[in-house]
Length: 310
Ligand SMILES: [Zn+2]
Image (cartoon, rainbow, N blue to C red; front, side):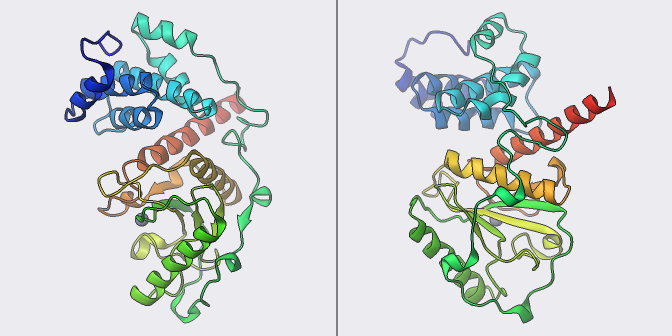
């Protein structure tokens, strides 16, 4: 039924399904969006099926994972869909789906990935991460009397800036970050910009508040030992939203892995702002990506532990 031919033109059917929210309609929509090369929409629709509460049946998850793997491949990011493809192969019982999964080429892990300490393909060591220095966005000096020392980092929380922002220019990002600092210091009374890191749409990672200071991004005690990472952009579709760029996601993953290795954290330590309070942050187009990445980090760690046991 998900793969079936349609009496309506595909584009028309997608519009028709836009209003529907049932699992079956979302799955069908994801599949059609993939056919129409609307890969980001296909990823979004499939994510809505996978990351619901309660979780979908194995059968439904397998279909949705397949769509994600194929959509990532169509974006030239097959590596990112590797976990989806693996999981779909484990879960698939439908013969047509199994056939399609066999046709989907297997993506090999890059050398160096999958070991007990390199939790993610494309992982880079902390010292190799390219981070734009704080001075690059001309910050106001922090009000250190209003800052608390950071305790040992034990978690990482992902945010969006909630402001539409698409520029890939270095200078535009720097201006945007200094505006966020002004808002945080002048209007909210923080001692400095609230986030430790910011990631612009081209994937540049910028230093925000220095890591020796506790952040101000997750409310009160939730900030203790909590590294705040903000992706520039507004990932709430209904409010003039946009999607995170592939470069932004890749940098987020590299930064998170490097931080986790540096401070010996696991996938359990990766959070969305919305895990701490009722907020849309980091937005419906980002939260499922964070959730999946956390699962992937957990799964890889278990796989690594099992190898060591044998
Ligand atoms: Zn937030």
